[in-house]
Image (cartoon, rainbow, N blue to C red; front, side, top):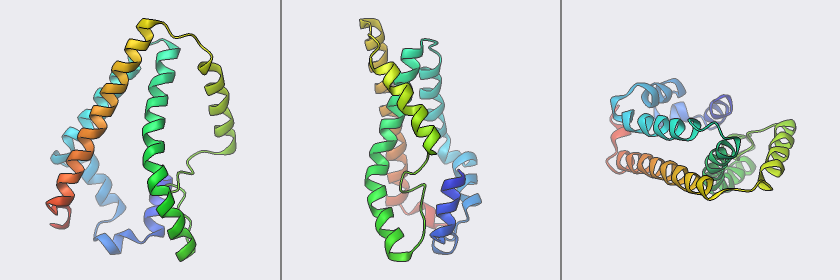
Length: 156
């Protein structure tokens, strides 16, 4: 959230959107229209984290990481152009979320778990978790899309 706020301020979104960062967070966390967003996030988090098996938890985190990487691979290209054109720094939108030490720890964890055997039961569970996460994220994108299409965010 610190990086998100930094990018928000760098892009001067308060003025452009007539929403402050705190208004946005209030909307996301308290507005009844966002109940389904929050429910989806809680649902897939609980589904993924209820399993104590480290292999299952690793793949749950990988699923989340990969969904974020896809988003930031597209947004990041645009953010890099904005950084260059306007001489600003957008770490969140460019996908620069981790320190060098965090990257190293992530790579070590990745190497450790990628060589682990996965049983058929674990594989089935990983597929279920993937389906749950993707369904939840798609539902959330649909909700956001309906807001944009209906211009509901501008009605402040």
